[in-house]
Length: 197
Image (cartoon, rainbow, N blue to C red; front, top):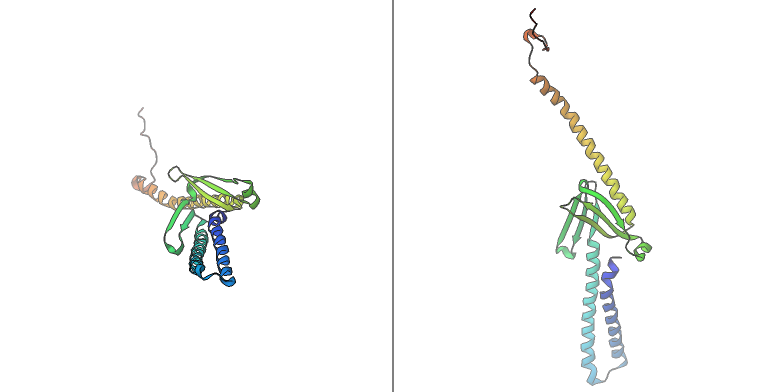
């Protein structure tokens, strides 16, 4: 769904060039008049070079497609866009704690037929939307993101409760330090002065 639209033009060019190469080769085998031989050789060389360029373009597009990934970890979403041969790399990430809404869409009947679609994760205002374009089985991808978000929130709540539980003895110690000491070793009590008759 992503690769084929990017490949149709280089593949069509490659097919046309292969037809020309076959015709040039057939012309060499069947015999060409001597006055046309340099032209046929020039065309054959040009077609061979153009075929190699078109083939290199196909390989480049496939490698570029394979390098682009969407990743979902226990803490974040990550979109890695790498160029072949390590020429450049662009990373976009969003923490699971910043995601506010997850939705999926299947834009066309062809996408529905092949079970491909887009998953949109709406994040905080400064981050904007994080979109996974044309992923296989978008329902499962959206469900996996929601599951990991739920696990992340539960882990955050557990860590916060554990931190509060660890701080509780410190609070009690601080409270006891701030409590005024009673005279003669007796605990401090709220005493009201005796009223005179």
